[in-house]
Image 1 (cartoon, one colour):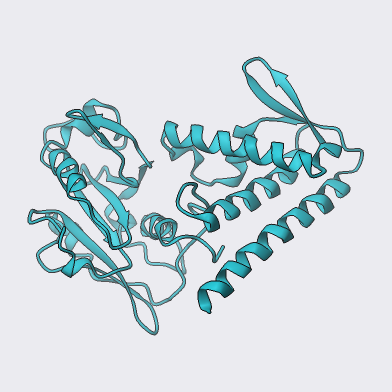
Image 2 (cartoon, rainbow, N blue to C red):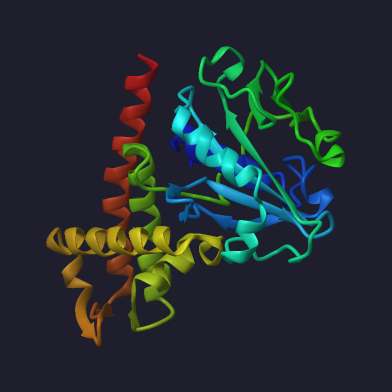
Length: 295
């Protein structure tokens, strides 16, 4: 999964820091951080807030609210996040954070992160946000906090800089996203097509959730709004590929208020071959995108 957007790669890197992985540092896991929720969307003081993920350490009763950026920062985002930064209890009272104890010592910090050096960004706020730079050199990524934009929790800040000892970032924790670019959507399409075969081998009928649970390792941690968006895209993908011949192997059936698909193919090997052909076509488009970027 080399053709993920920088945004999706950052999400994977943050999650990777919370996992036991021999190929990637587990600096945040050592402090007890786990993935609390991905892509939460909620309203605070009349404003819609939508960070990319929240990591929580029960041991420190502390959460990190993270927004993965390119280079651009909007001043209105600074204001929204600052409000939450100074009233973290809203994350508990609204049920957004679930892995922390609802006590007075709960705290949360906000952080931007980017592959770009945001140090000279004119919209970088003058407050106590953290800013994390995924800095790539010839041998590895060095995950560092910018001067004057460090974490307030001492134990957390002491983990930085983090040396990855590799230029390969994890990609399997958050294998796809939608709405962040064509490459991500194509990777999502590949994952759903492959999961169609996996699930069809195990059960005769399935719905979008069955495919997404098979395709996304952290499906349970996704925000409900993101789940609904992925469900809609999954149904669109299956409908499109049914028009291209997948209807010879699965058919759409109505099950109450939701759609399901039933396996009608007499040969699951034929379904596998059909899907392999579709995947090859999408993969070719991904590779062509990479070549175009290189040129």
